[in-house]
Length: 599
Image (cartoon, rainbow, N blue to C red; front, side, top):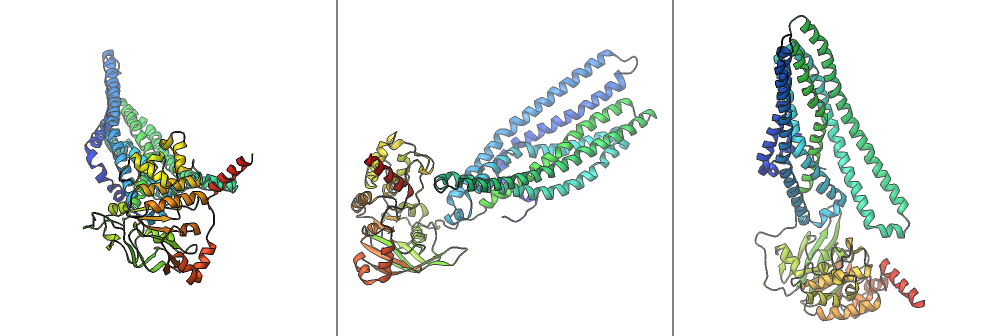
């Protein structure tokens, strides 16, 4: 959580975003202020009417004239309110869109370590809910807060001009209101922040439950998930109730005290009028003006709550925007003409910020065009080692080089063009098969698509309802685990990389499919340097050499046959590797196929 800042410090950070639309906002403010002045003018017309035209012998024409003037003023007030909306709504939505796009772009640039720490619901609530509230506050809350303040000041001045005694009574109610506002601001800020954070956590829970719906159903944990969600929802409800109570208490004060002041003022006003110190017209105009002023005073509770919530939204927004991207391109980046693909780890080490060293003194040479398998027990750091190559994480010691150049000296985009990755936990996008496969392809042609699908043995894509243009649904959950892995592998192959990094991409495939994929991979990987994490003996067979990761470092490198003969730990690791697919979806598919065959 960011450190506490003052209201004006937080709101001041919005200035660079609203600077281009300040003229429109200023015109909206002027229109709103003129509408309030027009509203304050109507009581003065009533005063003239009562003092001059409603006396014995007064002219009826004056009454009609006053009625026409009041009608014109009402129409003018309505027109000015409409103009205010026209001036501010479009630019406010423009600022909202620009801030949202900027936030999204910043999220794309931030490191994987940042996204590991932040819940997706928290980021979603900042990108959607907080920025939408800021837009409403810019278009309405901020302007009306200024106009309300000026209206009260001008109105009180007009009231003093008519009767200083009555004005003092009305002004006396302002003192406890000011004291209450300071207390309200402090308390409401805390509960508003808690509410917005809890809403973000709730959004994270919903997203995780939707994405993990198969797991919840498979393990029969839907009731427990519902109970957990109900608990979080109840906490948010209690916070919202506390927030409403704070606002209701303040509204009670700002509504009750002016009304009491008006009641006391009415008694005093009648006494002044009866003694001749105040005309009847002035008395009528005073209370009409007091009614106009009382409305924005009563409205101030809601406006102050909006302002404080807007401050919280801005603080939450800049918590993300202030996060520095630590993995960036150097000022003078290396851009090679061609990538040979010589990959080397030079005494490389890595550890997370909140933990100890995971990898240390990693020294490994992978020759251009060579396929190197990486094996080790679960939790040995294999996946972390792979992610150092495309700089999803940066080494904390030593270096990783491609063609003799430190990966930190490459332009980020160029490095990730050279290096393609396929993860064990596949992530597909809510788009077509074609778009997913050709996501990073330098040549997004049908020929490149067909070749990538053929290598990955993803021919099933052609039999989908709309072929390769079929929308595969959110995160590809309409496909089985094996199908998703094959699409992800095809995506990596279509990128035509110089270095291919595969994090056990065949774990969900059956043995026959895996054999066909391996046969095609041997053909297309002839000139591609490949580092592949292996969790199955059949995947190890794909490699030219094997590296053994033990206790966070490489302890042996050689062919599969050599390591089997010479290394006890390697034999232990190979014996513990899975022999078949690990994916639940694939296993269920195979069971269904077997059942159909029996029928």
